[in-house]
Amino acid sequence: MSVPTREEAWCVLCEHNKEAFHLHHARTVEAVMRWFANDLGYSEEADFWATVGLLHDLDFEEFPGQHCEKTQEMMRAEGWDERLIHAAASHGYGLCPSSPEPGHEMEKVLFACDELTGLIGAAALMRPSKSVSDMELSSLKKKFKDKKFAAGCSRDVIRAGAQHLGWELDTLLQKTLDAMKACEAQIAAGEA
Image (cartoon, rainbow, N blue to C red; front, side, top):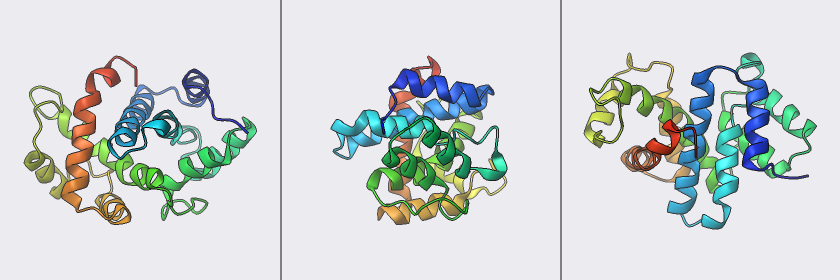
């Protein structure tokens, strides 16, 4: 059992995902997870957190109806560590039948931030700057409350994620916004 290098993980991700949107989302969650690892005192595990973020939707493009289930199969076929498999699958808790409950703080962060990064990214595209760099929490909260905006980003999952972490919703929104601001240039350059 092993944890793939970033290059190995990226190659496998690209084998199963071709759409630019999915690859951009993977890089975004990768960068946000690395930021959170450092912010929450897990700097020594930042590469692992980032790898989980990069690979969390490994199966989504090919198997949307079996999301998280196929990810586990694909990762086991690669001979990857069960801790990585469990962590990646846990982001679908309550939505995908085979997804385990997030246990470790890293899994709870992934669960909370996956949908939220999509909402923040959509909100950024609506801004004249097309960037998160000038986005304030108040603007994000308005978009969060507008159920028609980025309707595919589940507010219930985001709220549940904050609860799993024991955080106020505003704390989760602000920290994730801070993470995306810090990583925006890297994500745009295809790095993380």
